[in-house]
Length: 470
Image 1 (cartoon, rainbow, N blue to C red):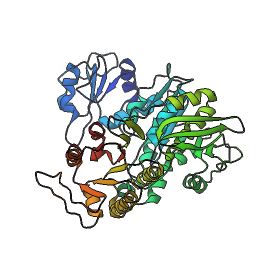
Image 2 (image 1 turned 45 degrees about the vertical axis):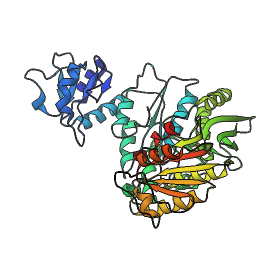
Image 3 (image 1 turned 120 degrees about the horizontal axis):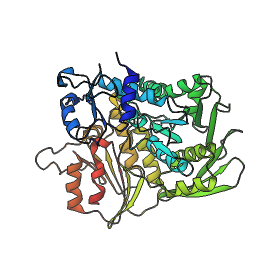
Image 4 (image 1 turned 180 degrees about the vertical axis):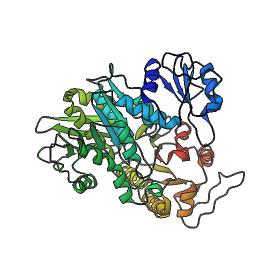
């Protein structure tokens, strides 16, 4: 049985945590996690040699005789537990309970990473903020983020949580124990794991379930989003009650809505006009692409206002924020203008991106779209809908990448030999490619110039490699 108090004393002496034996800062605490193709126990000795002070393992056979640490101030260098992952999660949950400042948990189908980063940018104008790095939002990333919390340093924490199966948000929420929660939206993603759109809503709504039970818990919610307000209603929570702190599109807010706003322009970067209650408004020019980012911007403004960040500072933070990781990112190269949103893709985000792209005025538009993953039985219909939207968005060329699009588009045969770069043309404007390498060869051959190009697909299609070639 895990002695969490003992493990916590060890952690307090060695508060930097690593799970990668190749990256072990001097004096760190190494957790020997297992993966599908590796066993961290086998690398514990290497981690210690590389600088780790103590290794947490669940295979006693890797511990040299006399090397087990049995007291926090002992001389051993190994802590043996029943399960390393469970120990990591329990340690993070225990550490979280020692932190008595606000914790905001962010989840949702689309936009959660962008929203988390916008929140961090805004709140950092007034507070010292800890927030999830990149997309470390799963059963390993969340504990690692929480273990970076320093109660004496951080004044607020923003923790991103993701899920692709029922129950995952409830589990992560039990570790995070948020004071505030924000669901960006719910959409048709990970249907293979969730089973249906209702499954998506149920799982994301596990955050609402937790906060409903906490007397002091508060929910940030977009009052213009019928799915989110419906999820609250199903749980007996009134968006206009003190339990909720709302933001909304202009003209759609509740009497208690803290922040409202609308799209001022989006050609191609997004400019938003927003205001605090009945106060004077701000027009904020962001570096984000897509009117679908309106809710993310308003969420950040709403959270900032709630925590007392000055409106002028919110405006500055939103203006300065630079998208990263290929999320709603605008780039200008020597040859083309690019809209890079190639970190993730599902039916909801694809359709939103194509709708926005269709509204942008440009003489020569092109789309490069990669497969959407984890859609299960809905995959064929989803890819057909996206292909139809892509062909109707005003682009001169539509390139589709991957087997899912190949199956969804009729009369397509792939050339999968050594020269897998030679696609079969479907029509005057569309082509299908087997993979990103085939696309790279096609780019080298035809050298697109003077175009506005939308690049979007699931991360596994590796379309993030293409901007450097365009």
